Image 1 (tube, helix red, strand yellow):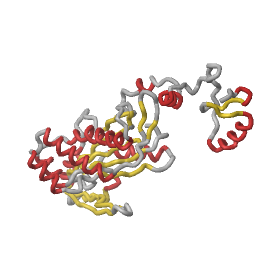
Image 2 (cartoon, helix red, strand yellow):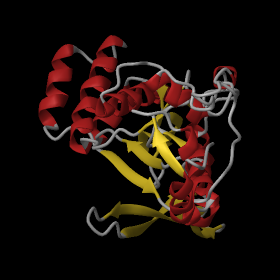
Image 3 (spheres, rainbow, N blue to C red):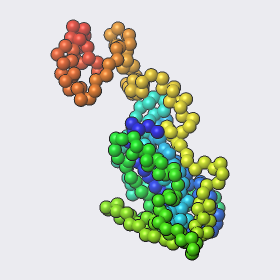
Image 4 (cartoon, helix red, strand yellow):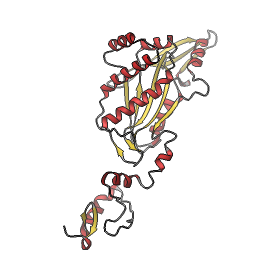
Length: 303
């Protein structure tokens, strides 16, 4: 996972009453993973005004079948780059403003249409579940802040490790054969303060739920899309030389690595941004700018 790009943690949820219906009708929630990844990729592309399918974000997505309290509550956790990359040129584009409220309705419509196609619900039920939840289905966004790599990888580890952690268990009563654990009951929207509760459960019921929510053997629950897809390496290798050069050539039809006067490859040098101001001031004493290049004054061509 590229740590040089900015990332966002996105969670796609569905309402509780619809969860119960899906459980009763034996819906396979793993289908939600490619569905949400496709929706979010289109969401970024539309926000950036990009129609070219070569522009791809990097997406890592997984499904959690239950909530923190071991209730049936399928939802998708997704980590995505905020930027998109042209997989042919390496050009990077930012989507700009994202209409966060709009994606609730995009997700609601797409998921209900998916359920109709899978014959899980009828078209009449589709209308019912759309009218019942007029604000759409909740999609939560959490920017992954911080420059340290471990911030990103801790988030990836969280969504990959599953729905329950041993640290939630607070007590085990061997005499009564019960287990007590804490779970996050809700989180305040404004302050993002987390509120917790405890639940005591028969230990055999607890084990049955844990086994039920575990993915089937050999079933992949962690999926990679876009620039994080497993088969993308060869395409990225085709970019060849440095991505900035190919991106400039793609946009301006000139190879910025070749001198426009003598047609030879120029010497590459690196100037850290902290010293850029000083270097530019020194450069303009002996060079002028012509067609986007710094050219020594004695070699400048008359306009």
